[in-house]
Length: 415
Image (cartoon, rainbow, N blue to C red; front, side, top):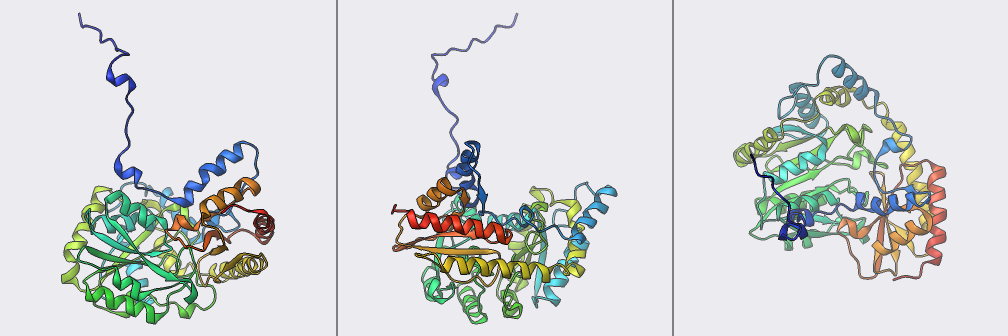
């Protein structure tokens, strides 16, 4: 007869806990983390106004017809099996064609798809950097990058974006951060969270640094179709030099209004002999995670080749809502903002506070308005705090939000 195991409540096991990994402790994602408090307040009966996340579908923007119809066709025709790890050939061909013919990117070495541009960024960094290496990030930056680096034990070195110069990268500061363990420079253009658009001159100077130190450029252009004032002012970094090593990221989340369909890609360009081993590393990562969303890969070709008719209306709505935000910000004492030229975010300066996280939490508790503190984007200033607000909502919602922000700002006394 098998002896029954008796649990001894006095054993050391009874008082132990399951410890999380060191990697998990290093991962922070402020855009979603602010929701923890917001949900708690909502459960207490507070009406919340979520202006923290760039999700067009939460507001009055719909996934483009080309993507929806392609996915419906795919699902009706049993396209729910595994796809090739790198992506469907027709999607890869459409991405490469768009990169060459519209963006002017030549010397394309490889194209791969992912479950959103976020997964492509994650895979590209994992294939590149080892613990103890460092990667240069803009400050402020999209928090995904710092979260990935924290998980991998890779140091994030933040180069300044200059608020007094329309949030352009400080090239001298960037160059000063490079050392023998530097592997890449991250460029987010148009920038999230500031909405800035890099000038051609700045991009060329970044390329010079990368070439001088044999660095990869991780070039995030997910908002490149959402330049609000002068589309011709946008230049794809990889189009400016055929030799520099670049991975350019893009996808269907923002310009095609489908963040939840998780369809993104990376385009590797530069000199083949410098990049072959690295590309092989990316493909090892791709195979290990099997494949990207199969059905929505069929949306890539129709979106890139014909799915632009929605953009004029989208851009007009975003301009109008951006301008409302700017006029209201300018009217609130202590608040200021460099007008965003792209994306659907405004990065707002709050004079005289030292803890923008506390300010944003107090705003949330007092008014229900949910925004993300600037410190969540890796940005700190000694004389001010910041918050990012999303201007995707309709005009009435934005006006309501700024009425609440104005009243709160007038009363707030914390530092």
